Length: 159
Figure 1 (cartoon, rainbow, N blue to C red):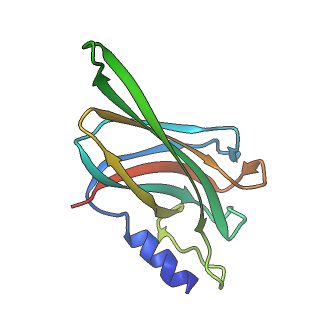
Figure 2 (tube, rainbow, N blue to C red; figure 1 turned 45 degrees about the vertical axis):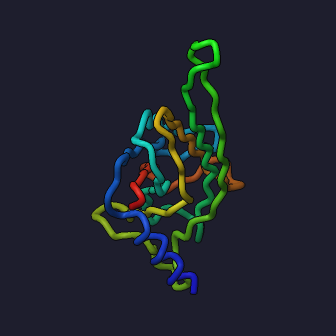
């Protein structure tokens, strides 16, 4: 069952990106205090699938990887007096993503030096004057997570 869920989550975020960026983490390990910020900027109005990806080596020690994802959507609008105003809404999501199956095999797409993972974290609705900033940290108890090379953010237009 867990393998089917992992397969569904992996397939859910692999085509049609409107935003796809990866950030490298420290080779000694990703420190919980090291927040990765993705300034997406403005997108066309619509609904998007928000996906978090990561690239891991066999040095990653746990069956799952927990993420804390904070998304802030800023909306620019005019006040009744005609002045520019900025409001925002925040979305927080915490998820655990499978890394290894029950047999100890990585469940990501195999690469030369690492496996590639991508998991859907939910939908994001964006208005005409909205811009988006997403912050990602790991949500594991261990302070520094070894075996991670990069963490990324993907947004895919829902049609």
